[in-house]
Image (cartoon, rainbow, N blue to C red; front, top):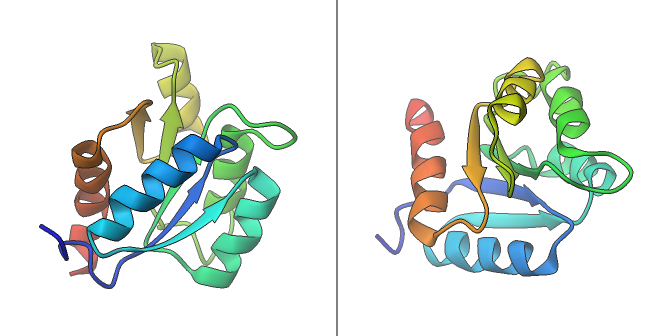
Length: 129
């Protein structure tokens, strides 16, 4: 399991330092290359620079929220097919529907476990293999 994500690039966008750190630890222990961003604007530039295989985006962020960030990523020709997983602490039907509208590929409820985070990456990268 330790290198199950070897060669996979992930960008994790979240304004919570705790979430960023735990996500980075979980994913890098599994072998992924992880780039962190603390808001949507920072996240967009890191996505452009790093061309990730999977992007995790927090729903609730200042300035540019997760829905806006996801929509901008999905509307970019180079990232249309890049999986975006929304991270949320409030998992309602409305949130899921709104996430689908902007093109998100999955919802993960916070706090996430190492297992759920790694499974989400594996789920969305199996088509690259």
